[in-house]
Amino acid sequence: MDLTNGADITKSEKAKIIIYSKPGNGKTTVAGLLPGKTLVLDIDGTSQVLSGYKNVDVARIDGDDPHNSILKFFAIAKANIGNYDNVFIDNLTHYQKLWLLKKGENTKSGMPELKDYALLDNHLLKLVETFNTLDANIIFTAWETTRTITHDDGQQYTQFIPDIRDKIVNHIMGIVHVVGQLVKKADGTRGFVLEGNQSIFAKNHLDQRKGCVQEELLVPSTN
Image (cartoon, rainbow, N blue to C red):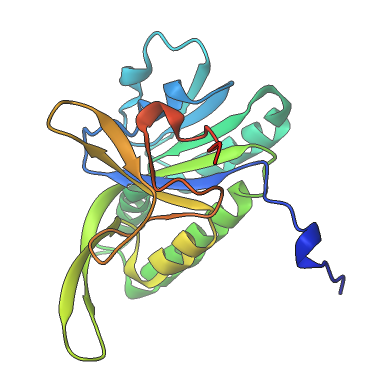
């Protein structure tokens, strides 16, 4: 086991990020705004918004075989990673729906079996960990949901989080550098919340920014 003094620890040069929001807030468009070249996996069929972005290459998942399709995408990304600065997986919420639908096709009831949910949890965790090994900025997207959190004193509050399986969402949010909620203001401006509170889960372990506009997700703070 190697030991490293804290003074010698450097922050990662490749960001691992989850962004989430309500559908239509502009998550997919972020892929076209990232600096450098971006490889996109279109899972939810929204990549048409990237029309005209020459810095983006798009692969589309096979909805009839999502499990093997995403593994093939990883293999393509790994083999060609020298050509890309960013890998953009859009989105995990829809992927888990496709995966469970496929499992349901093999049961008499047409619904996934209980064991399938545990298999999906393990699969999603392994996917995120595996993509994070790539030498590129890795951005996962998800839709938005809420959860109820109860304090020790019984007080409850509702918090926005990525719509990922309940049993693993905390784990997945814990193994990335940034979790950002994408919001749209009344004037049309879109930006990320990068510092969390009781109402919003967000974090930023790359720099000191508490928020940023949509196109500056990967722009480091000067502070």
